[in-house]
Amino acid sequence: MPAPVRLGLALPQFGRFAGAWALVTVAREAEAEGFDSLWVGDRLMTPLAPKDRYPGGDGTIPPAHRTFLDPFAVMATAAAVTTRIRLGSSALNANWYAPALLARSLATIDQLSGGRLDVGLGLGWSSEEYAAVGASWQGRAARLDATLDALETIWHDDPVALTGERWTIPPSHIFPKPAQLPRPPVYLAGFAPPALDRIGRRADGWLAASMPISVLTGMWKIVKEAAERKGRDPDALRIVMRANPIIVDSPADAALPRSGTVRQIADHLSAAAESGVHEIFLDLQHTAQGPRHLLDLAGELRQASGL
Image 1 (cartoon, rainbow, N blue to C red):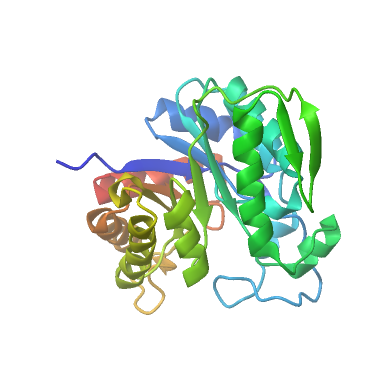
Image 2 (image 1 turned 90 degrees about the horizontal axis):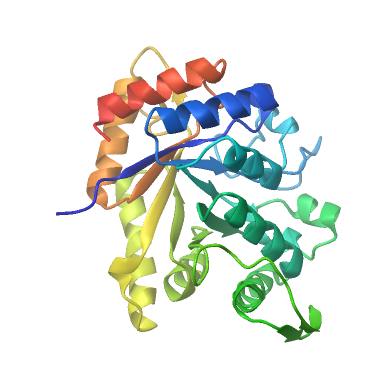
C-alpha cells in the first residue's frame, strides 16, 4: 500500500506576507494543524523592464515578488518556532552562492532544526539576477553539477579539500556538518530534458510544479529512466509538487490548474496524488488575504482533496 501523500505549505515570504508576525503565525499553526512541511522560495529582485520571461502565468513577474524575504533567514526563523514539521526550499538558486557558504548555511539550518531540512536547488530563470550577484549565466548547468559535488564533499569530509577551476579549499575543517546522515535529502527543480536527466542521475527527487497530469507523468518518466540508466532505484526517488493556485468563486475551465474553485483545485491535487506525487505543498500567498485566510484556505483544500 503506498504511503500517504504528505501535505505542506509555503511559508509567508513575499508581498503582503513579508513580515515576522505572518511567518511565525503560519509556521506555528501549520505544525499545530498537522501539516507535514514548510517551504521557501528564492527571489532577489524585480527588474523594471525584465529581459527574461517569468516562467508562470502570462510571463509577467508578480508584483508581490518586489518584496521577498531571504530564504535562509525564513527557514531559520521557522526552525526556531517549530519542533516537528520539516523545512524545505523550492528552490534555492544554487549558482548564486559559493558552495562553501551554501553548505555552511544549510548545515546550520539542519542542525538548528534537529535534522528537519529538505534541500531543494535549481538554476533559476533570470539572467539579470545572475548578473546582480556576479554569477555567470553561461555554463550554469555545469556549475550546478560542480556545486552538487562540492556540497557532498563539504558535508561529508573532514578535512575538506577542493581544487578546481571554480573554487579552491585548502585542507580545512568545515563545520557544522548536517544533522542528517549522510546528508539532508537533495531535490532538484527543472523541466527541460537535461534537468530531468540530472534529477534521475543524482538527486533524491524532483521539485515539480502544478501542471496537467499527463505532462507531469511524462516528465517523471524521463527522471525514472535516467535513474535506471545510472543503476539507481527509480522507486526510491520522490516528487514534491508546488501548487500555487488562485482560488476563485466560479468554476474555471481553461485556467486549471493555475486557477479554480476550492473543489476544482482539490480535484487536481487528488489527481496528482493518484498519479504518484509523494508530497504537495500549497503556496497560497497570491490568493490569500492574510495568515488566517491562508491557513483556512489550506484547511479547505486539505479536506476537499482528502490529503
